[in-house]
Amino acid sequence: MNPRRFPSLIAIVSTAIAIASGVLVLAGYFYVQNGNGQASLFMNIRLTLLDWAVILAGFAVFIGIYNLFQVHFKKIKKTQLGSLYSLLLLISLAVTFLLGLVKPSLMGFVFTTVQLPVEASLMALLAVTLTYASIRLLRRRLNLLSVIFLVTALLILLGTAPLPFLGNIPVLSDWMRPFIAQVMAVAGARGILLGVALGTLTTGLRILFGADRPYGGNK
Amino acid sequence: MSIGLELAGFGLVFLSAAMMLGLSFLRRKSRPVFRDIPAFTRLRQAVGLAVEDGSRLHLSLGRGALITPQSASALAGLALLRRLAELTSAGDQPPIATSGDATLTILSQDALQAAAKYFDQNVSDPMTGRLTGLTPFSYAAGAIAAIRDEKVSANILMGNFGVEVALMTDAVERENSFVLAGSDNLTAQAVIYASAQEPLIGEEIFAAGAYVNSGSMHSASLTVQDILRWLIIAAILVGALLTLAGVL
Image (cartoon, rainbow over all chains, first blue to last red):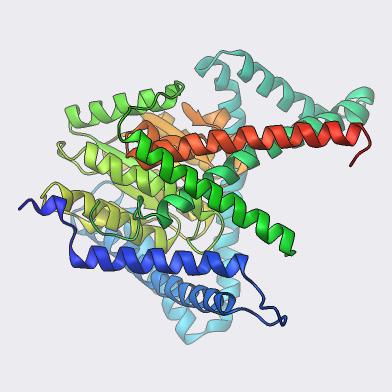
């Protein structure tokens, strides 16, 4: 008997539970109220299952933090490349954890004086990274779409930011920038979002059918 | 939600489900033909190269938590991760998966373990599925370390990202390795278009499974997406014409 052809009992049970939960939650969205105006049974089941999911996601954060600890501890143990940074991360993790237990009121201070400035610096770095990427775009992909992308970005920049001594550029700031941003970009964005919504729908259905099983079990 | 909208929503889901089941049954007998997306052709080449030269694939699943509507792109990424783990099972190094959400980390470990079990490989390192950070930039910083230090030859960034994805694509470029990137987030898509070697636009991220032969249901779902798109285009055109005629 080839074990690959026969999924384990755990796989069958987990698939059955996942499909049943998915169908019940979906039914809760379509059948919200009874005839007397009260919340339907499906609606109540949906809310209960979603509450359970939120609690499980909370526990998953603990597992995730443990995973983060394990990965960096292993890196330090094997003195891999960048293990000094891993050591710094683990020390910071331990200090923040202890501080959170001993003096929870200081957590806001830690966030605004350490986390926030570091993330703001990365955001600033991003401006340089994106400018550099845009310059390199034509070298990477020289085609009509790339040219349109760059010209549009340039027009929007010129139309948005007032130039020194000149202020706003007449036609660009008053007419062209609003037209690009509010008509052309919105039309394109709606098209993309419709496509993403259809993709989301079919991905959800694949999981409901058990064709994709991200929750485990053999294929 | 009004009863009309509830019925319309149910009708759309029911129609899509019926079409997917029917088409997946038909697709078992014939091999579907899709338009060429160069990014997926290069991905197949990159997978082959990774197996040959003993390097790794890195798949980053983004920050779309499972209990939010942004999870669909990460779920598509997880299906791709499972398939890529199977495709690279003959290689020396299993793929690594990074994410910015703990539930995705657990699922990525599970996907990698399931692929290893499928090929009777007892070795499955839980460290291959990693949480790199819980905030956007800490996640990106952690993923950059994986891109740089883990002998990665190809990177697939597929999930819900923000602008921080530019830092990751920049890191890939510095390492001279391959990157295929796609997101369901509009801002991230613009950033990816400017900075990634192989960008995926719009719903192309949901087509990944069909392009790497993940099964007949993936091909069927892609065809259903196309059919629904044409229906929406027709509805928009009819609506515009009726509005012009003063009926609506």
